[in-house]
Image (cartoon, rainbow, N blue to C red; front, side, top):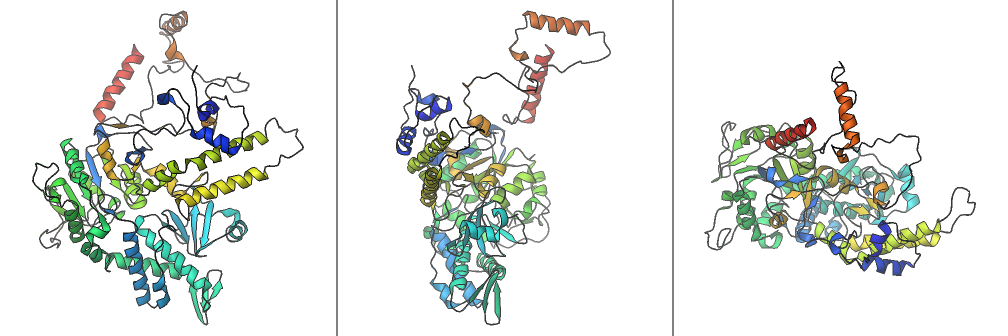
Length: 589
C-alpha cells in the first residue's frame, strides 16, 4: 500500500477529513509520498530552483541556429539596489534643476516599494497593480494604499482600460527609480501645506500642477539622465559598484559557439558604453578555460549591433551603419554588404538583419529583459523565439519556498471554505457563516504579499495573476533569473511546457468515475486502440472495399493513427517533412 501526502490524496478525491488550518497546513508541507518521483505535490522541485529555466511554450534548442542577446540587465547584470539608487538620485537632481523644490532631494530610494509592471494613471496620479484584464488589484496614491470604497469612487467596477493616452506601463527594471520617485512626488505635493489637493493634481495659489504634468516631467528627466546625463559616465567610473562580473559568462558563450550556433549582440546602448561594460565583463586573466589566453569581448560574438532603438528595430528600423571601433564614430553611408564577424554595426532593422544572416524566424532565440522592447515585439512582429530574463525571480522563488507555510495555510482555508458549503444545495435557506474564514484568508494573503515587498509579488496578488505575469506567459517562451542558467542544460535540450490546466482539469481527480448524462453526443474516436485483426476493424475495412467503386471519395474522416498537433515538437523544416511523411505512411497502411 502506498503512502501519499495530503495534497496527492486530495487530488485523487480521497480527502474527506475536516481539520484545523494549522494542522492542514502542516500536512500539506510534510510530504509522505513513498515514491517521490511520482509525487503530485509541488514541493519537490527538481534541481536548484534559482538555476532553472521555466517554460511557457515548448522549445527545442537543437533547432536554434542563432542566439541573440540584449546587453543591459541580460548579459550585463546591474547590482540592485545600488544601480536603482544611482538613477533615482540623478533624476531628483535633474528635476530640481528644472525648478522642483529643493526638499525633494531629501527623498531616499526604498527598494522594498517599487516593482515592475505597475500602471501609472496620469489622470489621478495613482500607481496601479492590475491583472491581465485591467481589474485593479492594488491602488496607491503616493504612499497611501487606497481602500476598497476609495478605489470604487475613482474606478467604477475597479477596472481601468489600458489607454496609452492615460496609462503608462512601468515595465522595465530601468523604470524602478521613476516608479518610486512618482510615489514620492505625489505624496509630497498632496500632503504639503503649500499645496491644495485637487482630484487630478495640486494647486498653490494660481499655480495648477496636474498629475499628468508631474509624470511628464519625471519621464523626461529619466530619459535625459539615461541619454544626456551622468548615469552612464557614473556607471563606467564605478563598474565594481554597479555591474556584476561573472566568470561563467565567457565559458557560456564559448560553449554556445562550440555547439555550432551563431551569436549576436543586439543592444540599444551606444558603442562607447557597450565597449566599457563588455570589456569589464570579460576582464579575466585567461579565456573561457584557464589554459587559454584572454580574448577581446568581440571575439565571443559573430555579430554586434548597437544603437538598435528597439522596439523600432523590429518595425521600420533605422539606417544600418558601420561603427569605427577606434573612435566610436559612425562611418558615412548605409552598410549594404554582408555582415562581417567582430565588426560593430549601428541601427538597422530586423528585416535587413534577418536577411543578411539568413535567419527564418523560429530558428532565432532572443534573450532580453524588456517585456515590450525585447520580447513582445520580437515575438509578435518577427516570430523569434523568446527568452525573458527576470532577475526578481530569485526573491520570488525564495519567498515561494521560505514562506511555503503561508501558501499551505491558504490552501487549507480554501478546503475549509468548501467544507462550510458541504451538503448544501439550492434548496438550502440558511447561509453558512464564512466571515471567520474570509478574514483568515485576507490575513494570510496580506502576510504573503508583505513577504515579497510593499506591493507584493511581481507575478500575483493573492490568487490573482498580475498584468506583468500575463505578459510573461503570453510572449516569453522561456524565462529565468539569469541567462547563465542555460549553462545547466545541454544545447540539444528539449524544453517542454507543462500542461496548462483549466480549473475543471486541475480540480477534478482522474480517478473519479461517473456516467455521462448529457444531451451532447460523445465525440470520442478510439480507433487507435483497435487491433487491425479484430472483427470491428475487419468490418470497417470491408465497408471501405464496398465503397471503393463509389464516386464519393470519403464518407467520413479517418481516425488519425498518430498525433496531429506539432506545437510541442518544433521541428526544423527537414524533420517536419520527414515526420509528416511517416504519419501519412502510417495512415496509408
